[in-house]
Image (spheres, rainbow, N blue to C red):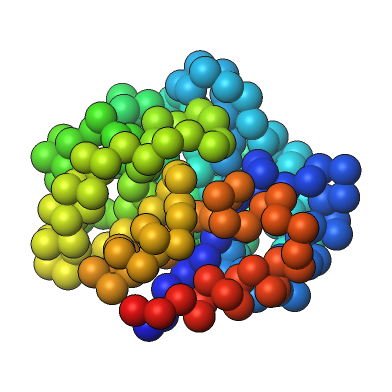
Length: 220
């Protein structure tokens, strides 16, 4: 069974970022997940525009940029100017007055448009945007910090999204508290990819390639 694995770079060792990126490239990661936080939309600051730009230059794999910021349309061009065609940009619909305008800017730049759905956001409130985007990032924890506990009711939301994804032509991605058990449960159901942080990938004292190989070898 094929599924994508994305490295949550806010969990990387920034004392050796070049080495981290190279080892993930060589280890077979599918994309680099970049969490941008402004301290307003979420109660935390995370990666910066400069962090993203550096990884974009160092990485041979695509970037997966998650904008946890208020009114992303005001600054979207700054991010798009430092990305490559084919990279993904997610916005939170609640963070923008007219999210479809921001999504169209992402499309016009040759990027893949996506939305991120918080645990408290219902599918019904974003249903029309599902016809625009190509990726839906389902947050299984409240956004803003790594290492949180999985919120079980999110599984029902994923089930609802799986029932309409073929008709609306989008793929589903998992972000937050991603364990081997969650991959075993949701990859066979049709979740396309998983963001890996401290639960499975980082801080394990083993080569990233070895860890990624073990995850891909999970039995279904």
